Length: 365
Image 1 (cartoon, one colour):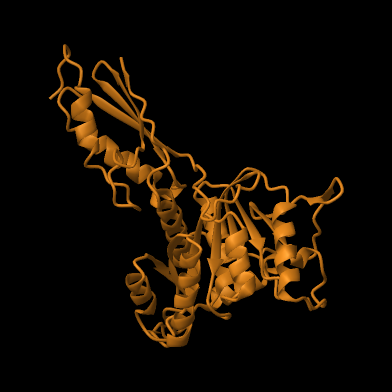
Image 2 (spheres, one colour; image 1 turned 45 degrees about the horizontal axis):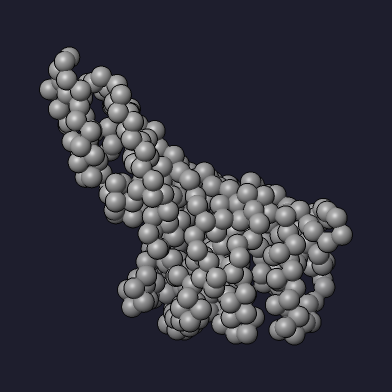
């Protein structure tokens, strides 16, 4: 019940906000340090919320939750809320200096090939862009670079700046660089491991990345010398493991998790591809490669199952023509799944070692 002579109590407002949980982390906004300001003007209240991950899809929902919570406080006549995000750099796992123009580097890896890692990488990057982030991709698969083709820019070449620096190619709002831009599709890369590692570090360091919130590295498949060298030498802030429900893929995914743990790179979660198959003729859904594998491996290694994706013809067709699912059909169930996975991954990175927005500003007029 509002009163013309009384203003709402600031403490009561913060207490009400303590019941508002962030949808991705499950933690209350106050504990996350996401309440950036509370303005009280008479009986009118305005709450400023700043998240540490891009959340365009959740913005209206969180604003509604905040308004409903604060409206229960005595003497509040009206509530307005604005929700934004600010992606801060997280500490690098190996104490390496961050790359210029890059806040966070996330390695997307798989223990084996053929599980859809590159397709997952490109759609996660596009999903993060759709959620409000600035994103890049480094295609680290020297022997089989696929990102240029998947993004529809296989015939484009980077602009050289100065003697050796390159500008990344921008496609569908994503900055990307790849060895695929520097060689033809018919050129085999017959290099030994040390040459590959050196080339990748140069490709990463000599690219002029432009103010990226996230740089996703599409890692080569496997857990050998190249992968270990990359994990140790690149200033990585987190990793994602891509697998399928098959037992053999899960065994290799476990090796990938163990590799990142050995070099102290947080595993932000697991993405399970080809979880189910839906018949295009009758609509019948079945687990042709097994069921529950991604969930089991996430549980066993105390990480998160970020999401599961079906074996769907459209995913392959869309990357084949250079227009991945998230931009080809943004409202489809598959695209929405990629966006949920991307939000959860980014939120997990935000809270991996505590919230990154520690300052709360309070205005009491």
